[in-house]
Image 1 (tube, rainbow, N blue to C red):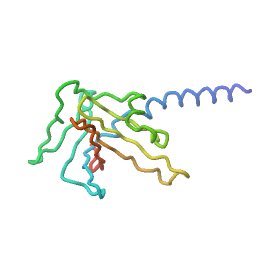
Image 2 (cartoon, rainbow, N blue to C red):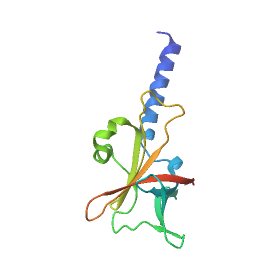
Image 3 (spheres, one colour):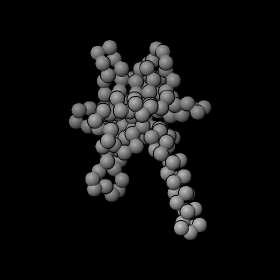
Image 4 (spheres, rainbow, N blue to C red):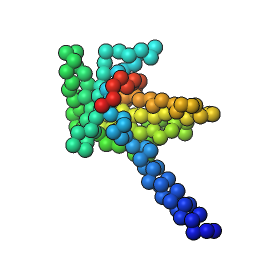
Length: 151
């Protein structure tokens, strides 16, 4: 093997290893305002926004007067990235069909971003999908979200 080939192979492996953890994390690209979709896929009046502030993720809901307030949470409210085991629990058997799923969660809710792996791959790239999973006394409630503004 030539030195150039060895260097190129090592560089490619290093780039791959650096990219893998980033592919499964929420990033600034995911910040935005999201409308909740109804059963027909149409936007409702309910909206949420997710953004970073001082290095932490913030989640707010739009109130009827159009103001924004933090999503209600009683304890363990800081948003944190979901672990691989938590992703498996959220997506179950569908996890293998998804490209780069990522979630942020706290004790009250989880918000996730994912793309469905197309076979053959679609051109242009498949769009990102978002869901919000709210914990309720009757069990988790899943809402499909549509990004209506980028922050």
